[in-house]
Length: 403
Image (cartoon, rainbow, N blue to C red; front, side, top):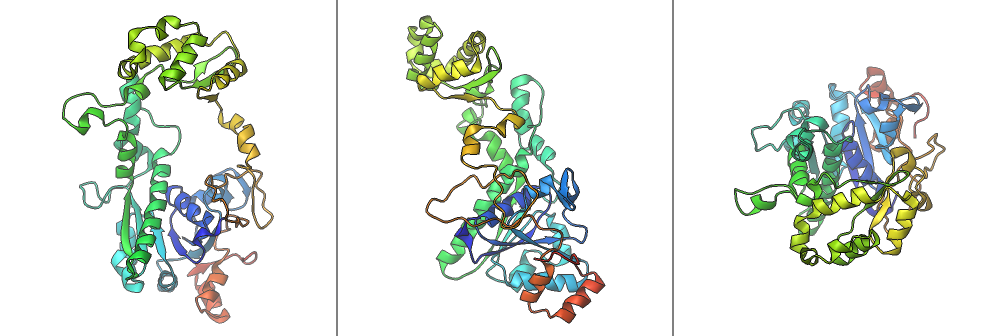
C-alpha cells in the first residue's frame, strides 16, 4: 500500500471483479475503502479455491486494502448506517444495476442530498442516454457487443471471447482514473461539489476494440477496418525447436538485422523493403517468413541472438511458467506484503511504483463484516446500539476476529 490517497474514503458497493478490482487499486494507493456487503457477502467470496473460509482466491485477488461491513440494506437500520457512511465519504463506487440501487434509496440524487461533496461513480453495462440503458451486462455479453469477439471473427472467420475477463478489467481501469479525475476536479474548482460519474462497460470496451482498428472509418464510410498488422494470421508466437518465442522487428533497421540473420538478404535488398508504407502492406508476408524460419534452433538460442541484435523479443509464458519469470520474481511482483499473517503464497502487487514514496504493508482481504463493529463505533454507535443492530440482523459481524 502506498499512502498517496491517505485521508480519502471510498464507499465500495461492488461485487465479483470489475468494481472490486477498481476499488482495490484505490485502496492500494492508500484510500480508506469500506466494502459494503450483503449479509451473504460478495459472491466471489465463495468461489473456489479457498485457503481460508469465506475468502476464495478470486476474492483475495481483488479485495485487499479494504474494510468490510455487512449490511442488510432492505432494513431501515442498514440504510441509516450506509447514509451515515456516505456522509463521511469522498467517493462511492458501485457496479449494481442503477435501478436496483435507486429503489434502495441510494441513487445519485439521494446520495448528493446526503453529501454534496460526494463523487458517485456508477459502473454500468450501457450508458444511460442510449437504448440499451438498464440491460444486464456481464463480461461475455460486453466482449461480444463491444467488438472484442469480432476481432477474432475478422481474422479467423469465427468470433471468440478472450480467455480472460477483458471487459471487466478494462472497465475497472476506467473507473479508477474517472474517480481520481473527478476528485481532482472537486478540489481544483474550489466549490467542493461532487459529481455523478458514469462508466459504461460497452462504451469502454468499444473504445478498446476500435482504437487502432477504426482506420478508414475515421475519415470516410468506405474502406477496411482493422489494423492490418494485428489482423495477420501470421502474427503469432513463433515456433522454435523446443517451444515458442515472441519477436517483433518494427523499424527498417530491426527488420534488416533479423532478415539478414535469417539469410534473407533477398528481402532486405528489395526496393519495397526500404519504404515503410510499402513494407507495412506486406507485413503478413514478413511474419510468414518468421513463422517458417525459426524451427532449427532452440528458444534460448534465438533469444540470445535477437537480444544481441537489439531486436524486441521475449519468452512465451504459460500462466504457470509466468510465476517463475526471473524479472517478475526479481522485482517481488508475487510477494505478499500483508501487515498480518496470511495464508497466501502469492499475490499480484500493484504494478505501478511511485518512487520516493515509502510503501506500507497491505491489509489482508477481510472476512465478511470483519470491520463492522469498528466502523459503527467510528460513526458514533455505542456498544448497546451495536448489539441491537447485530441482534436484528441489520449488521452481520463475526463473533471474533474484528479488526
